[in-house]
Amino acid sequence: MKNTIAILCAGAASVMMLATSCSKDPKKPGLEYMPDMYRSPSYEVYSANPNFSDSLTMQHPVDGTVPRNYTFFHYPATNEGYEAAGRDVKNPLVLNKENLAEGKRQYEIFCVHCHGSTGQGDGSIVAIGKFPPPPSYSKGNSSRGGLMKDLTDGKIFHTITYGINLMGAHAAQIAPEDRWRIVMYIHQLQNDGASPIGSDSTTATATKDSSKVTALAK
Image (cartoon, rainbow, N blue to C red; front, side):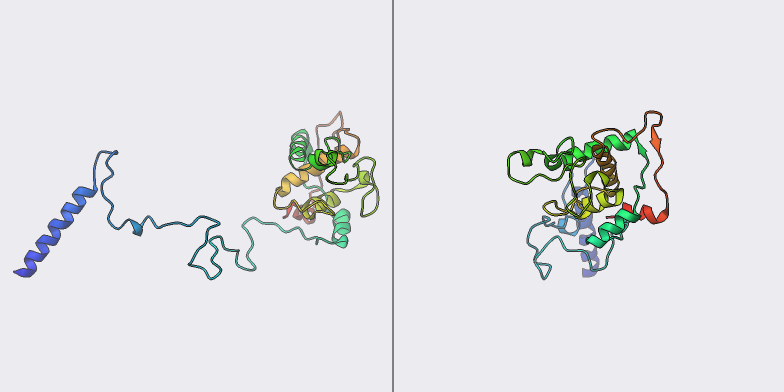
């Protein structure tokens, strides 16, 4: 008898809980029982976290992991890697007006403050005397030897990726495809602003060798 009463009471209580927690009125969402079961408290990205031994909420990736769709740039941040990239790597994107225009836009975001709008090394932070000017793309000499106007696709891409001297690496800021578009625009600046696209052609197909396309990396 006692068990029957207990079961009936439990059933009645369950019905009451369901009745009070549900409502057809969207302005009355009802009651939540044990909300922590599905509304677990979250930590801010840079806040302390007692659940990890290093007390950091944002954890480093596991050693050896690679992001999905990541492609490696198989040229190290050395002079040897720079020369090898200059010799082997060609721009895998098609040279056309759209890519060139986007390259100019990206250049004006990431490069113009040092290199200047015409690539003469007279950007805004140079003008105020805080930093020495980088060499002109059309008239200067590279700190690694040779003329700036002779820099190849691979050498420019390598430099944007890893940086050189006071210029920091831009791999984390600029996507590989946009780095290649910037390379296209720098070739225009090497030629004193003359477009690399001929007047009788709107496109030029870049080398498609698979060994070159890997340079879209990092």
